Length: 95
Image 1 (cartoon, rainbow, N blue to C red):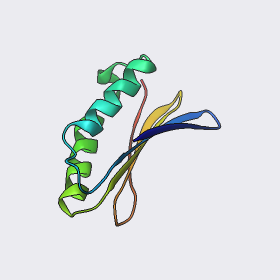
Image 2: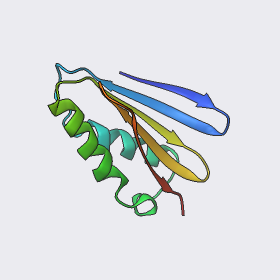
Image 3: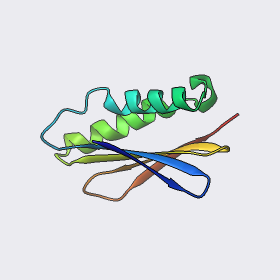
């Protein structure tokens, strides 16, 4: 399930993957879609896609629901990945 919200100059999209479902490539596909909408070249954000995929796989392997919040601003792309433990944030500046 995905939902969109706005906060100040940020636009967020949330992706929830139940523990009963495989993560697959959904974290990377979600990021790729957001980049396309905002006309951001993947080269602008470095290894963010592989990092979010790796974190989501780790959380899912522990048997937890995976919640991914993608945040886009003029300055950066940030991603919060949450499971049963603390939220992990990764980000990359937009060049």
